View 1 (cartoon, rainbow, N blue to C red):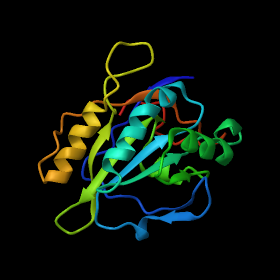
View 2: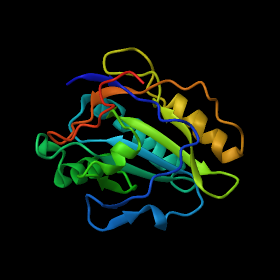
View 3: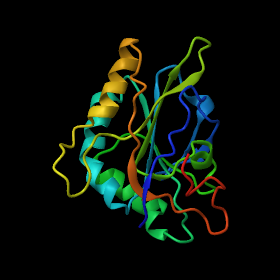
View 4: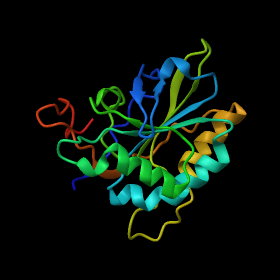
Length: 197
């Protein structure tokens, strides 16, 4: 495990196009999403940082699933980390009671489009003046990490979600998420990975 921060994709970036299988079957296409905000969460089954935040992800699913389109995205290499395969992801979602789709980004295209660097990582998009989904928030769930005393309450992400849903500006002072590095397919690491941005 390499402790890795978010690259902090530029605010205003448009939601990337994707068409990905779900861990429990079926597919989800970006073109099938409606005009509600979209929250993409880069997750996996084995990471201790993801395991730490699972209870708050369940609360977010419960609190926001009607107003926001949530989706988990697992981009870890199944060549090096088969423990993040579809069966394990489906089991994780079932155990936590998640209702949101859990996408398998096996070619890691969406992760690269998001400049994802770690698990967990969060990307909140909402429609701009042209009706296109634009990035409003990226970074940490809150200040809680395994072994520290900060409450697991989703404070940072919840503030962004509340702002988007009430039509208020999202605070641009956003803190990078920190977690295990995305496990890239061997020989296919993005050129920016591991560099300060």
